Image (tube, rainbow, N blue to C red; front, side, top):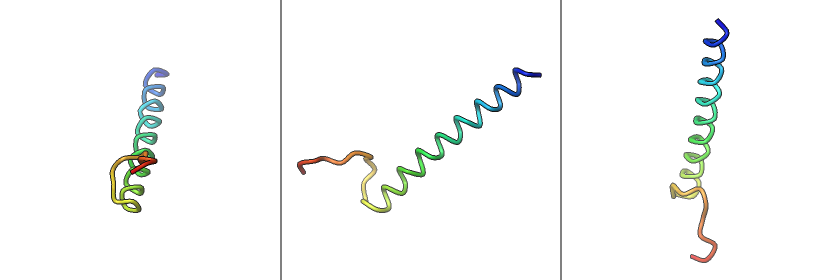
Length: 43
């Protein structure tokens, strides 16, 4: 049915967005050594 297709597309979209966000955070961690996405301007 159409509702099942919509739910599957929604789930895949959310999973992809979460994966991209987490991948960005992990790459940031590997490069900078800290989990925070934003850095303090005046450390």
